[in-house]
Amino acid sequence: MDKTNKMIFPIQIPNHWKVAISAWSFRIVSALVQIISIRVLFNYLGIDRYAIYVILYSLLHWCNLFDCGIGNSLQNYISEARVKNQDYSKYMTITLQIVTLLFLSLILILCFVSLPLQKVILAKYLFIPELQTSNLVFVICSIFITLTFVNIIIKVYYALQKGTIPNILQLIAIVISMLSIVLLNKFYHNNSSILKALLCFSLPQLILLGIPFFFTFKKHIKNIFCFDLSLIKTFIYRSLKFTGFTVMYVAILQVDYLVMAQTVPSKSVTAYNIFTRFFSFGLLIYIAFLNAFWPTCSEMFYRKELREIKKLLKKYCIFGISIIWIDIFFIFIFQNFLVKILVSDDTIIVDTIFFILFAIYAVFRVITDTYSVFLESITSLKIFWFVLPIQLILCICLQYFLSIKYGINGIILGSLLSFMLTTSWILPYTSYKILNKAEEQK
Image 1: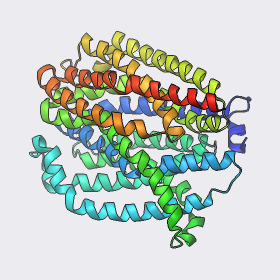
Image 2: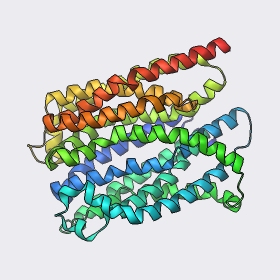
Image 3: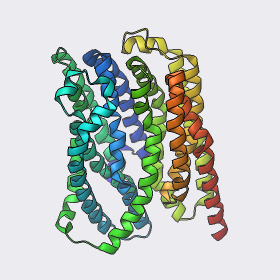
Image 4: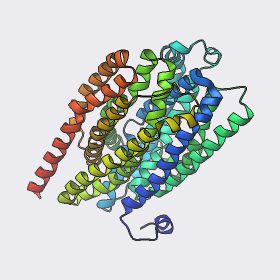
């Protein structure tokens, strides 16, 4: 047990629970900051600029795709090496080599595509002066891409069972972000800037995680030009296994804002953003637990603790659904009060159907995420290549056509149906097939 965890958690409890608790602290504070910041940002930017802010901030999830599965692959390599008592430094060097090449290539490409991309995704908002004078997509995507690679340090710490460290750093970063946006609103209220608002929520995490990233990888800089082509090929092959399905899964989860930018008005985008932030509170807590469970699950599988994994998967599904339903029920009861506090606009509302749809969506989302983490933790990814393209096509088509007819209810309905028809049953089936086969071979 590492010294950091002993200081923070003196009671003897499973390590992944310690990491999960620290992650929950970060997720809870992060969710609260995101919710509280809605009013500050809404007052600072106004409804149209706030809609632009929401759409541009959603690009963070797309930029995360440029990780190309490197973080997940490195995490699994470290977990496997720990179980076998092997050295994993060679994988750290390879990671640094690939990240450096990818970063330079992506920034170069961004120089050419960012402005046309801005004109496409923000076509409805080009009348805003800031969009006419600034290439916001280039600036913010450059920061998001850098943050994507810096965040690999989180995977390293998780694999080393030291996940409390990045969780605490992220907690500090989100608090700094909140203070920054409050000060921005107070002293620059008459000169609203979408870019400044975005920087407030991105730079603190970039800086605080960039420091441990540098000190962890600096000893590998001397070997950055020492290429082991065979090992690099193996590493990239495993990373690419993660990349394809990660791209599709993130697209499934994040295409909603890009669709809404084309099909619904600014006020509906704002309403959707506010309530999904509330709804995602419980989901974020559960995802934080799954992230902590990932390396533990990987080590349990390689130790052939198969029955224990089955029990945990079932328990965690029930646990996740319970958390999210409590969250949704609370928001439903206090929805009018919360909206009044956040935006002081009685017209920004959602109906009861939206709550019901999200509650049902939560069930299928929890099941999918739980069994997805298990399959990723053992690098069993073939099924994702089959099922996710189907889900992505369903999601985009359903969200687009349903949102034209039903507004933001159509967005959540499209997401719900895409999960219900594909991953929510295929991934559990595949997981138990793998576990049963492993038990027979044990």
